[in-house]
Image 1 (cartoon, helix red, strand yellow):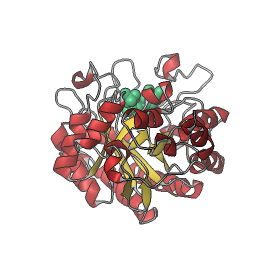
Image 2 (tube, protein in one colour; image 1 turned 180 degrees about the horizontal axis):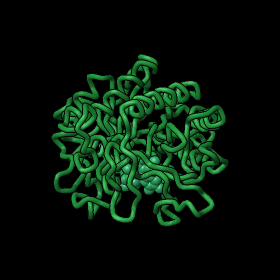
Image 3 (spheres, protein in one colour; image 1 turned 180 degrees about the vertical axis):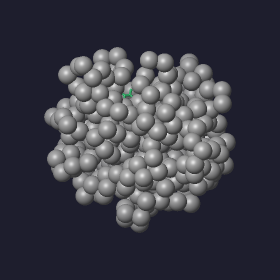
Image 4 (tube, rainbow, N blue to C red; image 1 turned 30 degrees about the vertical axis):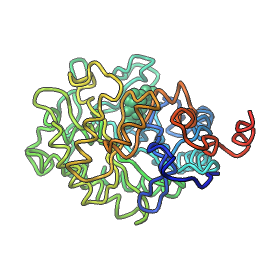
Length: 373
Ligand SMILES: Cc1cc2nc3c(=O)[nH]c(=O)nc-3n(C[C@H](O)[C@H](O)[C@H](O)COP(=O)(O)O)c2cc1C
């Protein structure tokens, strides 16, 4: 599909990169996006339509949405899951959509923690009521501290339950491999379970899973170590972090740099640098997002932890995306909403940035006729 080119004439955004055994033809990533359209955790025809749009648009890589490693680890009853055969089979078909176009695809494994048992955003994103058609479930967290006023108090996990959840991540990672995904991302951001272990605002445990940063890092690190053991040596492992909580007394960027160093030693290859979400609402550091508003966090993590990073957050122009890569602030750019607006963002960005053959990013049957247009 890709024509050999002179690397010097190819804009930085379109320079290929190899991570372990996976070659990414460019740096444009589809950021994970919950679709609230799953059926008992399995993908539906909606997901096929949704992912087909991006698979055809020239991406370097894609990430399937936040996928619960257990039934109660989903955010809402219509969120994706990966704890049974039906889900594994359905997700395998989604992976095939990308593979048919030569695009590597990963899946984001998650546990919702105290943000689970909620309604989809279109229905208010509020706690499920037990009286409704969808039964609420008991949420879990490092400590029995509600997300914020009006949310139920989660159950503080016992040590045995923590170990079970680590195993659930391992089991889901094994299913992801069987389903054909090229890499896995551990969702350590946005206030969900892993992030809530990291943040002092949510984790007030006094055992080895809490306390100082060392204790609060234990859960993500144990998950990553256990997952790394069961995925192939040549398979990339991504980790999405909320680099900062953006709230007084919360997680700071220096904490995440240390986490990133440890994650790297445990076998993580790329830190996907997001932010916020620990109380559900926006923290003050990102109350007014502007294009590339989180890029500095990616640059800091990359520089100080010496690890590959992905930048995200209102990256909506070819020029910005290319600058982020050219300046060395990130190795990948993750684009969520702008991909909904323009699923062929990568192709269009290649054209705009003077790529010598933008159509080489497209399937041959499109590229051939578009070159002659
Ligand atoms: C509809 C929607 C669903 C999202 N679902 C997820 C998700 O499953 N996992 C995740 O880490 N982030 C999720 N996000 C956050 C995006 O991946 C991204 O970090 C955020 O939207 C900022 O990027 P953008 O400005 O390019 O949209 C979601 C965002 C949107 C708009």
